[in-house]
Image 1: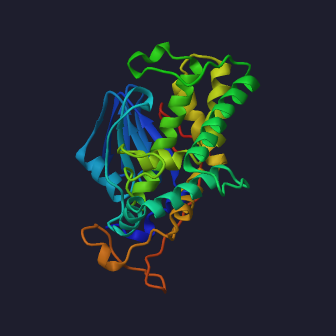
Image 2 (image 1 turned 120 degrees about the vertical axis):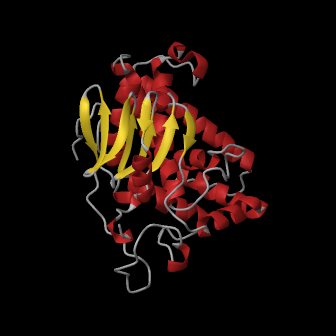
Amino acid sequence: MRTLHELPRFGDRWSYLYLEMGTLDQTAAGLVYRNKNGDRDVPINQLCVVLLGPGTTITHAAVKALAQNNCLLAWVGQDGVRLYAHSTGGTFSARRLLWQARLASDDKERLAVIYRMYQKRFPGSDLSGKSLEQVRGMEGMRVRAAYTQAAKECGLEWRGRNYDQDDWCQATPANRALSAGNACLYGICHAGIVSAGYSAALGFIHTGKMLSFVYDVADFYKVEVVVPLAFRLAAAGTDDIERRVRLACRQAFHEARLMERILPDIAEVLHVSDEPGESPGELEGRAVALADRAGDGRVRGESQPAGPGGVMEDGAPEGG
């Protein structure tokens, strides 16, 4: 039986793993992914999110193992650009969900959170006296300017963000690269949100979708990390661009310390603690032991070295 102190902190995990056309199963040594290239070991307790693409089969034992190790499972479309379903998070506490719901359902509190979110995107800017519509307009201008600037720096023609999921190949390489990169970013933000006990659906700026809060959080990092990477890779060539973006995103997320930033950034805008520890009464139903408690009564969290990402899609180990 595992104990909580054996589970790595979210900030110390590898980012994500995308799989397709194979089988994920559990063995005596851990998880193994089997496809036409052979069998490859998968780090069972170091992953943040596993994206299961078309042609993927996963056993009940593998799902159970990943759930016990607080790894989010997401069933996605080709190249990860469409989400069909996802598993639950690793916490049994509803404290953060209740606080998030309180903020989202109170007009004054919700507006305060929105302004704190925009302040993170406009560091050093004075937003006082500006209406919500004005601030949203500033955000739209900032994103469009980032697209235009990135395209100019890479020597690409840019006619705007435009694509059709039902006719994916007709989109420009830059649009396809942006969508692939955003899908990876959404997966990590989603995993962080549910791992700490928040709801992915209770958004503040974005509302009305089951991933509204994921979009809110991902916007903290999209222009910084995904936009320049997507345009750079689109300019480098169009062959297998979605896969190249996914692999490059892992390294970019590591260099941007994304895994370390997500939960503290959420805690900052929601005015809560970023410590995801649970009290003994909140652990009912979790298959863990409560040995080795910290002096303040919380369960210790033992970290392992951080890295950019664990296993490549073809099974080759990725450097850390």
